[in-house]
Length: 287
Image 1 (cartoon, helix red, strand yellow):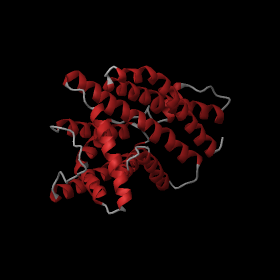
Image 2 (cartoon, rainbow, N blue to C red):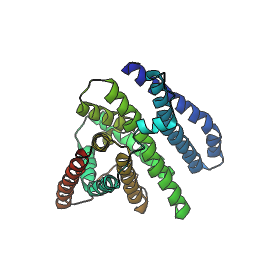
Image 3 (cartoon, rainbow, N blue to C red):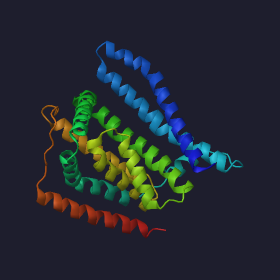
Image 4 (cartoon, rainbow, N blue to C red):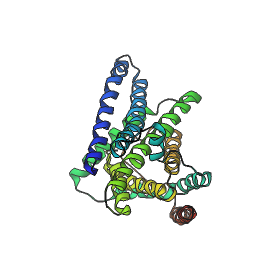
């Protein structure tokens, strides 16, 4: 099976997954009419994470493996191994967590720069409109509070989203590009990071998410495991969730200021680079 056939198969499975989510989501949409909008959106998000982000990559690896090795019986364990989910190192996971914590000021500065980047007035008006719409939706999704609300938000927005998006992008999509094309692995990292950023449909966050998605790819390269990138993704989402929920009221204005000073941002960049070097150097010496 050629690269384009594998990529098309992944896209078809993802489309079918979205279709299943829409069918499953019909009862959830009916909840909106009874005033339970938050519950409705959470059910749809859970369906998307479980079906599109997790089940689709597993099915894709099984189908691809069956086409490549018809004499062998594919298994779910083989699919998990192909996606990099059966290999983990606690030192790598700890470093992945520390890297994302240290990088918070850096990515905060990148977001501010992206907001202030000059662009045509029409494009800026469109970007501002989309940003405010996304903020409004996010404000609805993140309404739950209390212990139960926090627990469900962490499981939904941090755990399941991190695992699911990593399985789809750094698992299936990355494998599709790496194993079935002759592209340089750095080009592949950039492409996968770009697709990851574009799928979020927010132009102001394009560059920061692009860099973030590319970093996740290199975490997989260096460790040959999906778990460090999952930990990075989880940590990034958890920090964003805590920051958002710590605000007195959702920010529904188009504004973005530097949260950290220049000294902290520079120190954050230096420390992040050092930790990345340790991360890469430590894992590259493993057999």
